[in-house]
Length: 278
Image (tube, rainbow, N blue to C red):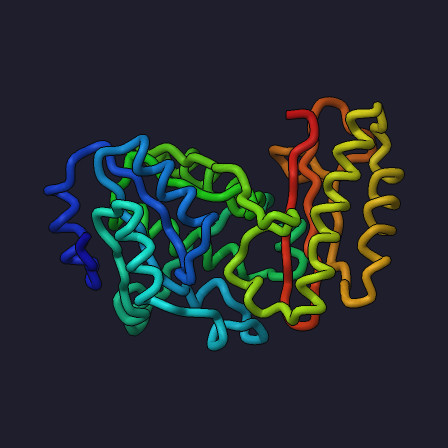
């Protein structure tokens, strides 16, 4: 496994890699969710590149960039165990040199849901992912379903900018009690961690209601909200039932829907989702 820190070196070694190339972009502090993406990439490609980069452009000034968990030594050991070929680990000055002023935006799809609460977030995501795609030039790139809106945005960007790659979205990996794995889970206090599976419980309730014929989103949302509001430590940013492609809110589910949410526990913000009618 080689660790590459500069764009020039990454581009030089890219030419020598066996194709197809699978790519997993991460912000480090890896967990089983990340490793499932690496495993999928390993199974489907001859070479695997993983990036570790905590992207400052997707954090608002009020968010947790300086406190974002980091453990490079642990991450590298985990990636080596998975058989990763290349780890791309650039510095901020490498990705955003002095005077940097170019941004990639996907418009409508970034406005609802996370966009309502983190209006500058997706500009940072799409810009860094675009840069990473250009640097690594993968054949296949792997993302998790937990970040459902992000996955949709990146798929749209790749399609509309005619990028020569496949964006592959993999299932959310969960703890035994249902909590979606996230690097931010480490921020939860023991009491918050005990309460946090309420998110998944509410999603399972939505799935059960749908499977029994409920199609009115107001009814589903009311019952989901009630489950989370039973938890005094939980504060809901939003619960949504939206079109799986446009993210427009639905009043009635016809075929399928993305049920998603963001819930705060103190300063820790958790997101989760599932798709009804798959």
